[in-house]
Length: 87
Ligand SMILES: [Zn+2]
Image (cartoon, rainbow, N blue to C red):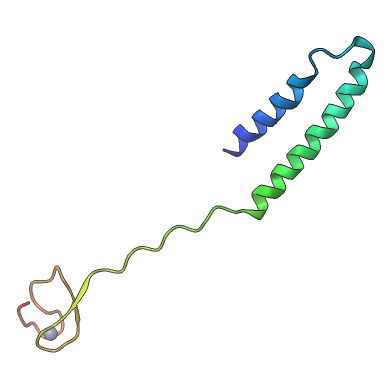
């Protein structure tokens, strides 16, 4: 993603000087390089300022209360893991 954005930026900046008069190419070239450097530095900064969000936490396993001992047991369990009562 970052490389694609940088490539677009470079293409946009390089592609904007096609009709420059010959006598001004060197000056334009230098300005363009400076602009590109600033642009890339700004991109770097923005990517640093907005890091990718942390991965979503896993949902907790589904739990239910044991009818016998009232402790939490998995809804998938056939018997209570604490007291062995059927669920
Ligand atoms: Zn139980």
